[in-house]
Length: 492
Figure 1 (tube, one colour):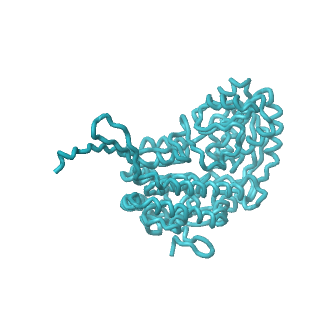
Figure 2 (cartoon, rainbow, N blue to C red):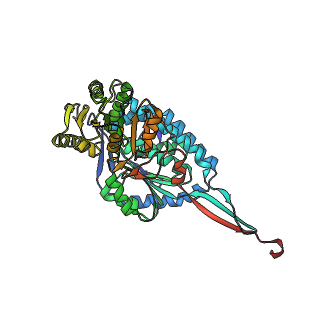
Figure 3 (cartoon, one colour):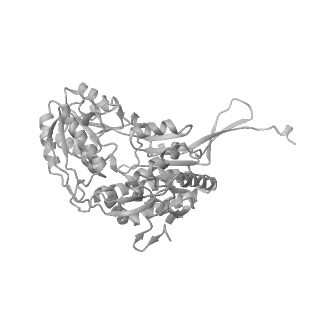
C-alpha cells in the first residue's frame, strides 16, 4: 500500500496524501525530484492542482472538528510515537536530506535532532487546548472564563533549505493542539519537506484527513493556498517578496511569516578572534549559506579587521567541498542551477560596486553546483551586503568603532538574526539590545542546535514567533465565556 513502511524504508513518493488518500495529483504534468549533486531523478510526482487543494482543505475541516475534541492523551501519544519513528528512521531520512537537499551528514543529523525535539515538545503541548482560566468580574454572581481552543485548519508553506524542520516546526504543534494541516512543501524538496513527514505521522496513527500534502506549481495552487476560505492560519517560511504577497492575499487570517534575512555578525575590538572567526565561518558557510538566519555581513572593528580577514580567509580556504555523502565534506551543492546563477550574479555585481574578491573558485561536481566559499571585502553598499545572498558568500565590512558597527548592522530593511563577539558579556548584551533583529547571539555559534528557542523577525523579516511555547499562541485561539449564576430563588 502506498504511504506505508517496508522493511527497506518508505516507498511511494510518486504519490501524495490528499484528503486521507495517497494518490497522484490531477493538475496535469509532473515534477522531477532531482539530486542537486549527482543529477539523479529521485522521484517523479504528478502535480496537484486547485481541485486537489480544495478537496484537501474541506477534508481537513471535517476531520479537525473531531480531532480537536479528542482526549489530549491521544494527541500526545501520537506525537510521542512520531518522535520515536523519527529517531528509528534517522538514517533513512538523513539519506533523503543528503540526496534531495544536498545536506552533509552532520547538517542532516543536526536538523533531525531538532525535528525530534520539536515533536517531543509538541507532545507536551497537546494538553494546552480545551482548558480555561478564570478572570475577575466586578458584578455579583458573574464568572468569566477564557478558553483556549484550536484555531482550525492551518496552511503551512515551507522552504527547501531545512525542509523537514521548517515544515515540522509548524506541523507538529499545529496537530498536537487540535488543528488539521494542509502542507505545501517546496518543489525542490517534496519528500523531505512533506511526503516523508506524512508517512511518519500516518505510521504514528494520525487519523486520515488531518494532514494533506500538496505538491504543485505556485502558479496553480500558490494563491489558493492562502486565499481559500477554510484555513484560519497561514504559516509561511520563505522570501520577503513572497511573504508580502501572502500578506496581501490572505485576507482575514492569522499570519506567521518568517521571511528573508541579511544577518550582521559584528566583531568588536575586544573580541576573541579565534572564537569570532569560528563563528563567522559557521554563520556564513553552514549548509552552503542556504539558511535564513545565516551571516550575510561580517562587520569588523577597524582595530582587528586585518587580523580577522587573514584568519577568516585561511579558514574558508580550508573548508572541504564536494559530495555531501562524504563524511569529510563541509560544503555540498547549491540546491539548483537557478540559485547558483543568482549567487554568482550577486557576487559579480558586488565586485562592480567596488568590493574586492579575495577568495573565489569555480563550481565543481557532477552537476556543477558545488560552489566553493566566496569572500569579499566591501562596505554596506555593495550588492552582497544589501541583498540576501543565500549562498556560500561572506562580505566583510570595516567599522570605525562600536557606534559605527551598530549603525552598519541596523542599516538594512531586514531584521531576522544577528550576532556580536566581545569578551565583555555585558557590553555584548548592551549591543544586542540596540540591534534591530528578532534574535541576537552574543559569542554564540550553537543556536541552530537549540530546539526550544522562540524565533521570529522584525522589519521586512516577518512577523510571528516560531518555537518554544510561543507557538501555542500561533495555533490556538481564545474564547471568552461569561457566566451569570442565577440565584436559587429565580430557578424553575
